[in-house]
Image (cartoon, rainbow, N blue to C red; front, top):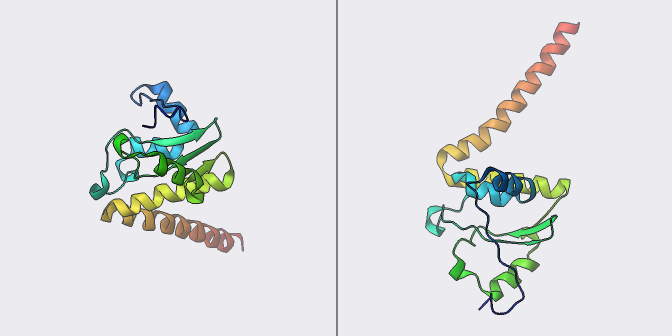
Length: 143
């Protein structure tokens, strides 16, 4: 078993406590989003909304996340080793990693429902449209 191998340390976070939830959002945003927002969870077919959401971490600055890790009984040493070498699963405290986190949240939102997909496509389009209209309107008014 994983616990008896003494290679891993297991912990839990009570996400109903504000201080723990805030810490998770600050250090492990993608995993916190999976807990707090139903659209950031995997599809219903793969066990959406089940807790706990399991991820691996190294210190405060690096963690590995895979949305299929929802059932403790499904986590094996082989799956953990595979997770730790998967480049797309690692998240760090860097600007590029933060962008990847936000991209994953957006793609999960789009995959969660038709409304989520419309929201993910329309919001950036509306923001860009308003920016272009504002820039063009400012140029016309300045002449």
